Length: 195
Picture 1 (tube, rainbow, N blue to C red):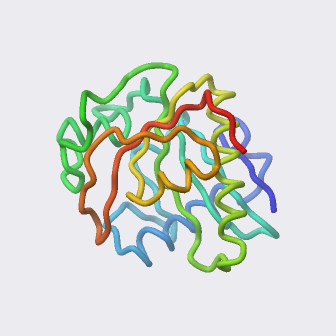
Picture 2: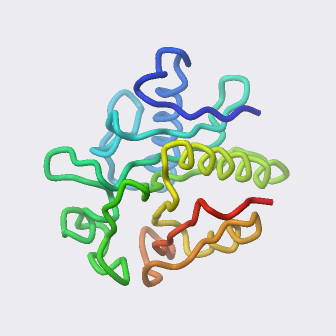
């Protein structure tokens, strides 16, 4: 099992890995979760997939197992910044504007984590290992990018997993009913040490 952090600077070195990641996101979010998201050629993408973002992929033998996107909170592309802030600003009608307790942060040391997934066909006996690989690479990459904190909108049960692996994960908003489940915004400190 491998983990790779992709950027526009290194996509050429990893063959079809980026396209495969977007195809896995399509299966996960559009086909299985039935989210209404932009798509083309069997790939899911949105306005936050820009050269400023990074994508972490967990993969094995050419197959994507899991992924996450990291986006700097200081980045702008037209009217968009990052998903949580844009939702708070009323630009994303499918996400409640009151998703955070306070104002969405904009700082070079804070990055957003979004489009987090583990493929449904990952066997139960490997899921924890895949999740650990994904979290570990996300933390390593975020730290290398200068992040001391990551903000994300995740399933409400996920903070328990983060704490189990030693991450300081704290609620940053209320639990919300979204897309058939419950989600919550959290902040994750990149200062703490993972087990």
